[in-house]
Length: 217
Length: 179
Image (cartoon, rainbow over all chains, first blue to last red):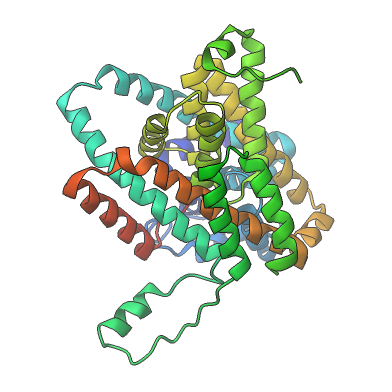
């Protein structure tokens, strides 16, 4: 792919990835390998392997890199776009792919802010906001749970197993889940400090990193 | 660096490039430290621009989340564009956005360029532990964001039904994650 094609492909991804960077993975797989089975199913790992086979470098390398993309600072979608751009065209490819994916957002977010301001008082917009506000709150809470599964708990909470246990379908919960006390304490201390003091999040993050390096192994 | 302006009025009096630089640098700091994407970055931006600088309000954060979710694109970059536009118009949006992508661009290019030593460093127990600690801290930051927006966000029975429905659906279904 030349640079212009790369830019256009990622521009398209930027237009299509509703709800954030994870949508990028099935989209990428469809573009580079062929139609994905269904972008809505969480078959992310299988898709990743197929992208890895299309991209230069070994599949293990790419799967490894995606886990790094999630564990390194920065937006996950940007990390993924940068990597794929780099594999196609080197550093210029990385820059072009990343700029491509954010260009539509730059225009659309500004348009959305302007339209929201202009039609703030209209009934449909009022209704839209009345539904979106509590929905956003629910999304924030679910994000907290997902982050907790990456730190406080040792893995995904097996909700389905709890459900079948509670409904009596199975006798016991098979998947055990560990609990990291230090990470829990860090989360609790963060809540208290952020509500009570004006300490910058940067000091909280750096302090947590140091404590975590010793206690969250 | 010179002293940071304390209010939005002071900030607006600064030369345009200086305003853009402040936005750019704020987002560089956020995205080079925060692991986990979207909501983590929104929480950090809330701390920086709402709690500490008071340039925006918690209501704006709610509007920001609404817009970043509705418009396609990477959540973190959408939030950067929102804040940049609200504070300093188009170029503010542009520079905040560049700030939100630059650390990733550098880190990932370094890793992809085959600096395998970086990968080995990332794999050590101490760095993995540090990441766990950071994400633990982010759990707290996201909970604080939820607490601060709750009063405006969730009103009445309808609000709680939508909020809990969203929460349960997102937590159980595992389709869409934090990015």
